[in-house]
Amino acid sequence: MFVLAILFLVVALAALWFRTRTYTTPARPATPGREAQEATPTRRPNRVAAWFAVGAGFLFAVCTLASTLYAQDTGESKVQVDISGNIVGQTTDSGFHFKAPWATLHTFNIRNQTVTYINAVNGSDSDNNGNVRSGPYVTVQDRDGVSSNISLNLQYSIDAKAVTDIYRSYKTEENFKTQFIGNSVRSVVRQVPNDFTTIALITKRGAVEKSMIQALERRWQGSGVHVDNFALQEITPPKSVTDSYAAAQQAQIQVTKERALLDAKKVQAQQQVAEAQGQADANKVLNGQPLSDAALKQREIEALKSAGDNGSLIVVPQGSDNILSLPGTRGGSE
Image (cartoon, rainbow, N blue to C red):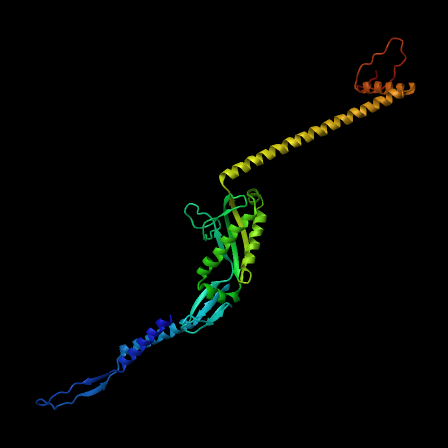
């Protein structure tokens, strides 16, 4: 924009020069009836050049203002660099700011940056949330020597004060993402699984994720970059491993089922033993202490009453005097 302003300035000055251009009237020899005339300079204004100079001057002012005034959004940090490549300033606050016309701006987003490593699906470069993927999934090797593919999503932020140092090292935000963020993330994701067995890598995703976060934080300590969120989306071991693990899980389920059935049978057997023991104890008591005549008579009465309540017919031996008058369920007595 500053170069364009200089061009408009040159055009305006040139138009002004044409506006005040001096025209020379050529000499004219004497002729019959007309005297000779010498060459005389004449200053004659050029209106077209004047309006052209005004327009070019206006555009020069607009371009100059545009090259010195800039707007900054929330969550951005801008580094000002002069034509020699030296850093001459940095702004971190949102709003309008001024700079030297010849200085250029380099913008860094200091919040909500996302890095996604997933495999391309149907040729798409986006993940399930619509974010453009940073690269394919990361292939890792665990402690057992088994290779797996890991898909992940990372969100990070940058300290505003660290942007100047980041620019000195990487010049552009794209270089910073590729050379620093991308390389360190892929390196950590490859390194951490070396401490986990294949089964642990599959079943203890939370522990693997926590170890990766801690490793990234150690690597980024002092750089001004912070881990805001880290999520392992998929851990995909070879198909042979997943098939074997599924078979082992099914076998474990069957073992658990059989153990539960065995425990139930044990409980049932214990109940039967307890009932048998109780009956044996009761028989022992009865055999050791015979019931009295009065107790036997009371049991006979209770039996006859129960039979009468149910409407049953009671037959007693001839000549017996054990007939009781008990209420029946059918409005009579037996």
